[in-house]
Length: 269
Ligand SMILES: [Fe+2]
Ligand SMILES: [Fe+2]
Image 1 (cartoon, helix red, strand yellow):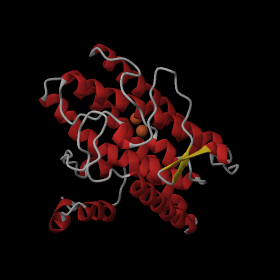
Image 2: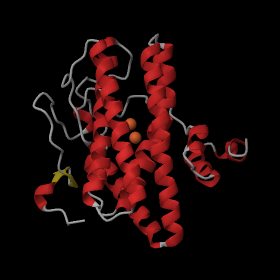
Image 3: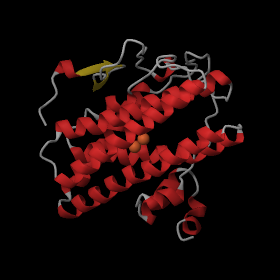
């Protein structure tokens, strides 16, 4: 790809990120998690905020996949077709969530938005690194989260949103799977690919550390970010298998989550 110019980037707390994609005037763009309005509960305003944020994240996923097509025009036809199909899926996800947001009385631009995944992923200069980060890591994590969110919306009496999220999850599995398949094939042919993946993960760790909330940081909805108890989201083993993570990779995720004792049972079940 053509090297990025300084005008293609922005600096936030010392971390260099890809400059934000264009947004309609109705959106308020922020650059730190603490400037988001995450409520952490299921009040009506929080439901709209969750749908709004998810809608915007799907739009970012579309833009990241589309930017891969633009930045790496010489990549193989197969992987370009997968990325093009992903663009179609992410567009549909955005539209479905936008429709649901409106049904619940919300509107586009009602809450601040942040292009975190875009800013981190689109700095990387190889398709391998971007797929490792966006599809395998961010969307892999989204698979785990979606499984929890489906139940959360259902338990709060909103079957329609729960079903919508279940449908999105099915598509996300395919986005993670094609990245896993392609990365594994390439790593076999060219072991140097593993170094690009390792560099991508180091890049993510550095930026996560730079942008992490500081003790006492309160977000735009008044929630204390470091004192807040996050939803328990653990590896969605079934879907990670469907997305072709190996048993060793799933075991490693479980170990990182503190379930070392369960590893042999969980991954051989
Ligand atoms: Fe999606
Ligand atoms: Fe996706």
